[in-house]
Length: 169
Image (cartoon, rainbow, N blue to C red; front, side):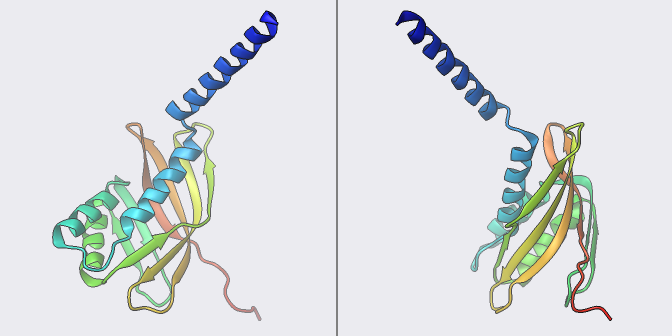
């Protein structure tokens, strides 16, 4: 009975140690997915948000990007946006918050590939957004390139993925 009890306690201690280890040292996949959810949350804003909250929100969003990040977005029905650097991203986010009443952004499906070095990754995802006053939701396939910089996963590049629409012929 004592051997069974000791063996059980050893198994419990090892399992608890593994669980604690994964909490303290989560996998890059888990960290990146959490960061992308935070990006969507930071890009979203509610109707009636004040000036200070808009500035803070835009700065928070820009903080997910590397200082030299590149954004190249081509969404149907809108002009192509090419941004270079965190400051451009910040200014564009401020402009969107000043122009739109509200915006809701989600990334419902993320396919993530972390490189072997565990210092860079590619996230292919669907961006879904809804603007207050628009009946249609915009949906766009996107590719995010991320890199671990000073211990943080930062976005270094965002680009739209061209999808085939309509029939060929």
